Image (cartoon, rainbow, N blue to C red):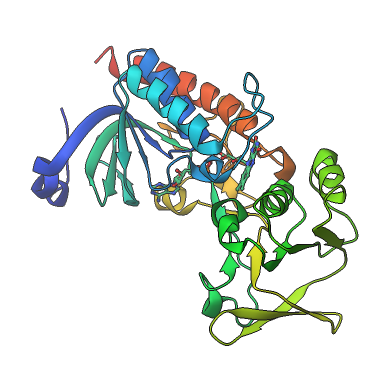
Length: 322
Ligand SMILES: Cc1cc2nc3c(=O)[nH]c(=O)nc-3n(C[C@H](O)[C@H](O)[C@H](O)COP(=O)(O)OP(=O)(O)OC[C@H]3O[C@@H](n4cnc5c(N)ncnc54)[C@H](O)[C@@H]3O)c2cc1C
């Protein structure tokens, strides 16, 4: 029998019930949805950003089976596959999640409320900011966090890409491809962390210049970005700056549910169990993937497979005999 608090009781008319709730519409969430719904589990998969970080990738060249596919196209395929097996997809923001008195989970979103018997957190990450003066003033006016999304606006313009990982690399190359006049690819250290193939491609492009040991200290302009200052006293006159410096894990929902963290990420065991019974986790948000460079679509979908199968076992053991 479902036991709800008086407040939950009041809202219960709006509550839809599912066996498994998944938070995240990135590759991890969608993969868990495919596995769980294919196993006959009634699944709701909720997310605010379609495809998560994968949705921002212009070209993915390292997902097996696809020589080259855009992040959105791969998301479409994963979503269609999950829906084919019966997953309900909800585009919405999860504002709150809590454990009910009978050990289920109530997920509250701007699109409605969902009551689930088990929960997979596949909440991934969101972009990190530079935290320098001027940055906030020029967001959308030359400051961007997604070269893949905004590159087209910078045709024949001069821009800076900050960061040394794969996202910065692919962003730099995307800007070059759309015809930016000049791209300064800036790393704060004396090396780049991305795959070597990207560095080779960048070096082969005439409009890309790689600058090392440079840290942005200020962004200046009048209506739009005009100048970027560095810690070494130098500056560059540019039309835009792309901060591609990594992701902040989305752990807010985990924290609400009392899920244990490790180094700011969700702590899971080898079977993707968290410390809270009935809550599992997968993908970039977990501490299982220790090296930031290994936060990839392939690693996310691998963990998501394990999380879904463990959740299925949990549901079978806890709920089918009742
Ligand atoms: C520009 C770019 C290019 C990349 N290129 C590649 C590549 O070529 N190859 C590769 O393998 N990897 C690439 N990556 C990395 C890859 O995209 C990530 O490793 C992968 O997306 C992580 O998947 P995930 O499902 O764990 O998390 P994410 O993709 O981050 O998805 C998290 C999901 O959770 C949702 N969410 C979080 N909190 C809430 C909330 N409160 N309410 C509702 N929804 C919520 C988000 O909206 C999102 O849908 C790239 C990343 C970027 C940014």
